[in-house]
Every structure is written in structure tokens, then in C-alpha cells.
Length: 280
Image (cartoon, rainbow, N blue to C red; front, side):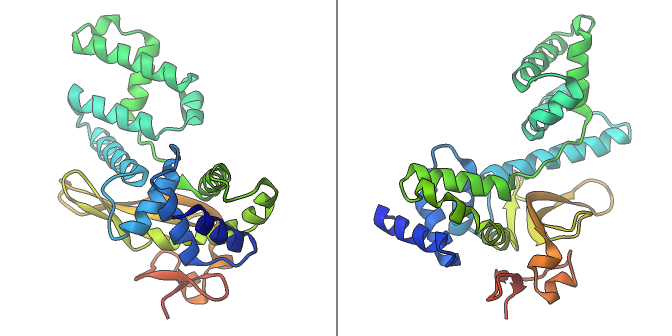
């Protein structure tokens, strides 16, 4: 996209004339020059390939959570993985855990946790279990045995990243930031509608649907991945949040969607009143 077009679309957005097609074009135009802001690349990729995603932070988060949940359930039944798989589980949980979670549970910074975990695994692989320190054991036990999940993206993160990148590109002027932020509700609803009724693909080819709603105790609009676990003799599913917003569902959804907070079938869109609604 030419800089002049990007600027024109941002100007229209900051005036409060919010259009889905403008955000589509903005995210598509920025996804290959996002300067490491993975949320922008991810949303641009959803615009380009909405049916299913097989890479990116949403897919990686779902894969990590799937591995963590499956291991946690197996260990609860007394079935423990071998060390090779435990290494994968620890890595998945470490990628998913926030810095605050690591600090609260272990009292350690992320880089220290990585180093301590590596030392513990090195000793275990060398069959030197007696040399594993209490700190190494605590780190290993937490990352090997916990079920850890967090959303891949939040509406606050997306808004901050988009504003930062547009400012860097010269398309959003510093004095326009307040007007830009005033449209954060529209942006959150846009991402929700974009991700809803799509899917992520796992390494083995299995496909997990992404579904929006607000069937949670805070009644906030979110997008969940419907994770399915195999090998349990019966169907085991777990809906896990991958996009979390501050928006209360009953305030920002049509009456039809508000009446079924966890059962939205088919595509959704932002209607003329600025709320999420099913296609008319």
C-alpha cells in the first residue's frame, strides 16, 4: 500500500468513520513490515487467509496449550511422559507463561527460569538426578506438571501495537493518538469478527475451530479455540481463550447474539449500530 493511501485510511478512521475495509487494507499493508509486532502480522494473515491458520502466535499458542492440557490430564491419571516429551511440555509451558506467572510461582525472571530448566534437564539426561538442586527441581516440576494457558492476543495489545506501528510509518500523527484510541471498541470487535468461525491447524493435521462469544464469568467478549484431545475413549474438548477483550458482551452484541453468549453459529459482522451481529 502506498503511504498516501495508508495515511488517508488512518485519517478517516481517526475521524470516527470506522470501516472494516479500511482496517483490512491497513493490516494487509502492514503485515510484511510490522517490525517484530507479531499481533499486526497475525491479524493481517487472518485477513489474507481467514479460513484456517497453520502458523503465527494464535496457532502456536493453541499448540502449546493443547500439549500442556493433554499432559496435565494424563499426569492426573498417573501416566507420566518420558523425558523427551517432558522437554517439549516444559518448553510449551514456558512459552505460554507470562513473566508475572513465573515470578509469582517461582520468584524468578524468565531468563533465569530458562537457564535453571536447561541445567536440570542436562543433569537428568546424564542420569545425574542426585545433582539436581532444589531450585532446579522446583522449576522443572512446575513447567513439566502444570497446565498453563493465556490468550495469544488482547484488545489492548492490538490497539497499542497498531498505533505504534502507524506512528512509526508516519500514518498516525502523535496529536491524533487520542482520536485513534477512541475507536478501540470498533477495533476489538473487528478482530473478534475476523477470527470467529475460522480455525487453526495442528502439526498432525487436526483442525480446531475458533469461536467468539462471552460465555465466561466476566461476560467479556473473547475468541476461544475449541481444543479436542484424542486417545481418551470418549470425546474430550476444552474451549480455551486465545483473544481476550475488555468489552462486555451484552453492551456490544445484537439481541440475538446476546441471548446465546456461547453458541454463535456462522459468520458475524459489525452492524450499523456498531455491535456484533449475525449476517442479516
